[in-house]
Length: 239
Image (cartoon, rainbow, N blue to C red; front, side, top):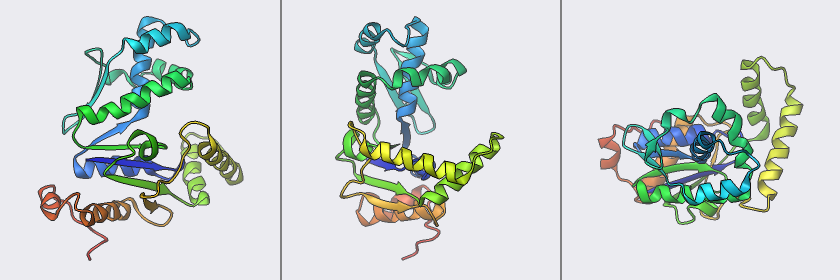
């Protein structure tokens, strides 16, 4: 089964996707980790961020397998497990430099699609998962939240970092990010016609999970036996 989760920045889609995958015991897959895996190889080979010729050759000879074994994810690059290297400081500092390149982004899109070859059950989140990566996903979810609520959540992140940012500034930044995501030339953020809309403005993560689980039941993608086997209880939806 493939569950595609898209949504606006700061809406809580990543948290919801991770919790859904954990609840269902499905694999959670992030495009960000695929970019990081590629970055690990780039750094190991000492390829510069502006050496597009070598980067093109690199992706032509690179095999990345992203899997979930029921307990944890593994990232295998050319037969080598690099999972523990994905969040090294040098990877953090370099990944954005190559992730902006169109040919790298297209390569990673292919890797995202390949997860369906190596994994039976997938939860993947992003901004073009249902529209581009998995247009035939079994369930498409679009997560949104009113912008002031998103901004207040983002401000808490800034506060933890000791940064003082005004609410108006954060709202303006989110509006700008939304506009760019929805109007970019390649793979703009859209809500697919058959997507399940989840508004996290007033709902808890558990309430949002229950809505998704009920929808899976209604569409006969899972059954009560599936829920019982995993000890899943719909806490806020009892009909």
